[in-house]
Length: 307
Ligand code: FDA
Image 1: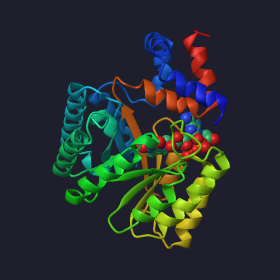
Image 2: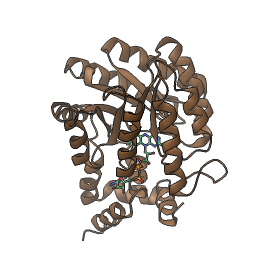
Image 3: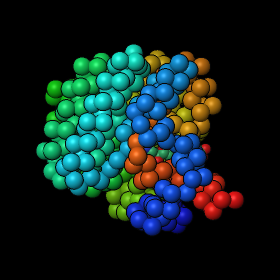
Image 4: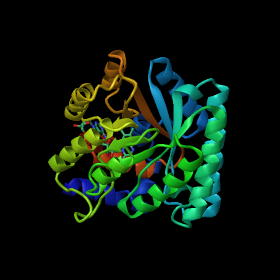
């Protein structure tokens, strides 16, 4: 992993840096590029604009690594409120929610995370929408896939996320490529040891393509989460090869990243979903986005010192 990336991901866990970022007013403007706001109202406003522009949305109420039951409950309540709002606003058909199990109690007790995720899935079903379980660092992969398998017994449409940087992921893609399965394939955003993850970007990209082939040749609904122009063009070529019509798979990108490309793909008839994070706990998310791109980091650091 690039040393700058490792440094920024480490800063993500540093309280002093966190306080500095949270209190610097100009930095908040940079945050707004990647985060829809701190409230459900702001998230709904952004969602409306994207949906009116022909895009679908997955909403993420920010938060992770909760070791407090009350906070986990607060996260569940936030999702329930959000789902109600989406339904009331007539947006549920174009949106879904993304949930991090570590935000709903996974580190405390897998059973608690399963119960909480089930409550969110039940509410999503009532509102006519779906849920995808985000994937976090490799120590949680088995637990997240166990919870996924459990919730899919009642809600078979619950989506999984698989990370191409993990050496295990091709096997997981094959296992989850069956009918009814929804899998978001991304490169992976955490600092992982080399024993479990490919460190070389080229190897990650190669594995992404192998995994994409496994998903496209199966009967599930693949969701390709990447901004990488090379991968987007390889996927569109592979989709043709596997006789996949647009709409039998989708592209996903993050809010604020390559918005022109999101619109270009949608205008060309592809299904495109934008991942929209919101909430007060935006810090860890922001650090992962900065770690992905040195240019973002330089821009952000300049805004912190006010130049
Ligand atoms: P890569 O990082 O190689 O970037 C390719 C190109 O995209 C860059 O050259 C640049 O042009 C553009 N770009 C990428 N990132 C940018 C940025 N931050 N700012 C500006 N331009 C940028 N990860 C995870 O571990 N678990 C998860 O659940 C998810 N969920 C998820 C959902 C969705 C919808 C997306 C798009 C991504 C995720 N991720 C994720 C994050 C993912 O693993 C990965 O870290 C990022 O998408 C960056 O990887 P790319 O595939 O975009 O390629």
